Length: 317
Image (cartoon, rainbow, N blue to C red; front, side, top):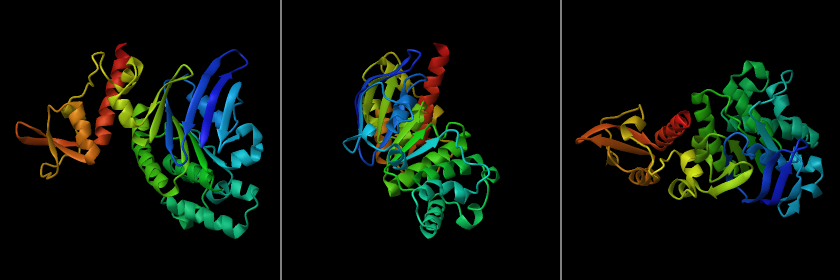
């Protein structure tokens, strides 16, 4: 679907942002680019729709060089969602969503139907919201509009550049969940940039970890957790120098405890491998200590705990 062949980017000031990148992103895949600031992930994303030009190499979409596409044709077929939502404040929500369909000369009936359908898809009642201005919506609602506006003309590809990082934790987690549900129905090719490993593990079918403009490792969340290629990946995932994950189940328990839980239960001293194996099979696992239930464990709570360890490790460096 999207192929990078020896792609590099050097800016006019001499900064090399991306170095000889080779990468394949599959059709219908949720692909996440993750890494620290300055790793080249946003530059990589922006080269796909030619917001940033390539210095060397080739990017192909459906086996056609992006340089061979008409720039308008290319961008009309690629939705783009930013952290700064950039809705037009003087336009209604309906007018914001309709921008690209109008540029593509869709008729009014088709546009109106598309707007209503997209709003319903993200659980915003069209009658209530389509005539409002962006200032009348919450931050999470505005970001939902940013997503559906990018989908308005039914593009094949959706580029998302840290779209949820400015939101509060509750809104961010809710939109992550909504995006995963949405992807199950729309099955777009999504390229998503984040610096948050927790977010990458939650969302990605595959994850590309970058550092200093180069790929360090590409794989599924399971690949990265079980087979990190070097110490940088281990540290990014929250592993100790001895190769073991720092995890104490009592610290990772979900606050929503249920002492009458009748599902699968593991002991509080379980290894990370045992924890992940249990959560691979089910969404919720009970934890017991000295024969008594002490709480519940979710995939989200484990990822959050590992992320906290990463942050603590950075503070101590």
